[in-house]
Length: 255
Image (cartoon, rainbow, N blue to C red; front, side):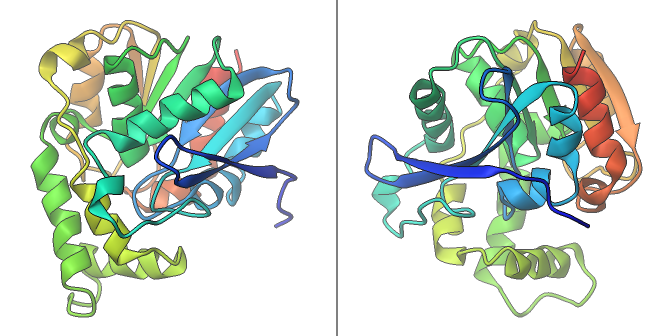
């Protein structure tokens, strides 16, 4: 398939780490900030399979950062560069760099967790998309963090075909940096029930119909009174390649 046109940019975070972001759409269109998942990057999550292009076709500007330790962003090996909630700090720095005030926000998996943490810390998007995430996974941090810590500390030993083996294979395709990613895991901050219950903007809860990696998305949608739940084909990793993901986001953010 032909890759749609996008532009790539970078800026320096307050601690000196270079952070990259990618854009599609007209610069004066209403912005949507989309955050990718762990081990992934903006290109793989949003651009490669046409999701961003579908959203741009509705008249939106789509801004897609590469998180610290991912993609074209810096991957420092110093624990000092991974204080608690650093990904949220980075996203606030990007919002400031771009001068965003009236914008929407969404994320997949780790990107969904980061989006919820942004809202908990005062971000005010008009609309929010929580993708590839469930209630139990958002409220229970250590289970998933432990899963990925096990993957990263035991590379090359996972049983072929297991979820750990598949995640390691994905890590290889995105040329991930295990040392940087291990440090990043320690920066994640719990989401409290009160923080989740405070979400009051229109919210899309979007997940694969076979994705239970982060708990129940239906339970999450039921918990959020301003949300609607959409299930698309696939599991946690396979849903990302489905055209239904981009279409559901375009339907939600394009109106």
